[in-house]
Structures are given as structure tokens and as C-alpha cells.
Image 1 (cartoon, rainbow, N blue to C red):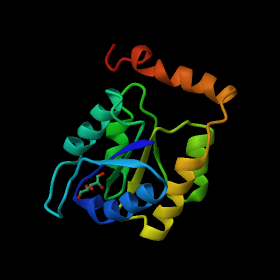
Image 2 (cartoon, rainbow, N blue to C red):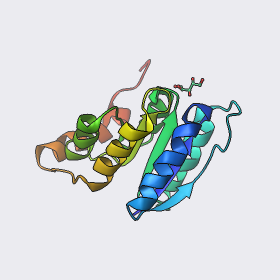
Image 3 (cartoon, helix red, strand yellow):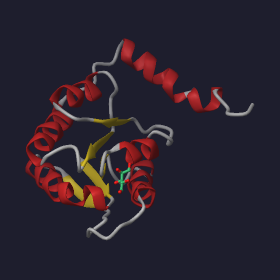
Image 4 (spheres, rainbow, N blue to C red):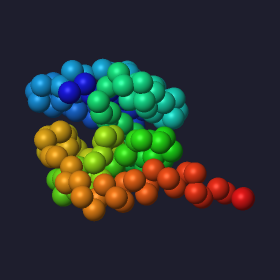
Length: 151
Ligand code: RB5
């Protein structure tokens, strides 16, 4: 599996741990930065990874910022991206079983390396259940066309 990874300064420490776990699990990792603690804007790095997912250069992506919230907001604006902000093994498992998450989001200031390791392993290895959950994901894809602010 080719996995793209991107973070801001708030996710920078956690990124190296996650890259290690991805590599241990046989993934080809495409690291799109950031590469220091220097303050940056998380959308700039989210866009790099989201574009690579949209172009099919990676199969899935992992995004990290301080809380994971900003990266979640970025990810879930893009059609076809199903970003799941995961805090533990349960949310990681459910993000795959029910939501077919193709974008894992972690908070570098909320999730430590040991928990992140568990989350990444589960997220990589848990299949999507399909069935009624696919019907819900089909509806989710139409939200941007259906709900127009100010319309
Ligand atoms: C950066 O200080 C912080 O706001 C960012 O990493 C993230 O938590 C945003 O949601």
C-alpha cells in the first residue's frame, strides 16, 4: 500500500513514529512534510497529501496537526476523501469497518506514540464491512451537491 503522510508543526514529532509503523507494515511511504517545528499553516500540507490521493499517487493518507481537528476539516472538504480523526483502537477500527476511512487523522498533541502505533496498525489492517455502510457513504458523497450555504 502506498501511504502519503503530511503534518504541520503540531504533528511533526508524531510523524516520525507513524512513518516507522507504516514502513514496518510494508507500506511505501511518501512523506510530504513538514520537516521541522517551524510554524506553518496546516492546510498547505493537507493539500499536498490530498492532491496526491486524488491523483492516485497514494492509496491512503495520514494527516497530523496538534489536535487533528484542522486536518480533519481540510480532509473532509474533498470529495472521495473519508477522513477519520482517531484517538484509540476503537475509533481506528470503526473508521475502517463502518466509514471505509482512506485518510487517518491524528493529533500530535493529543495522541502519544504508543497509542498512535496501535491506531495505525488497526487502520491498515481492518477491512470495510460494506453493506448498509456503503449506502451511507454513497449519501455522504452527495452532501456537497445537496446542501448549499446561502442558497
Ligand atoms: C497549530 O498551533 C494548531 O492550531 C494546529 O496544529 C492544529 O491543532 C489545528 O487544528
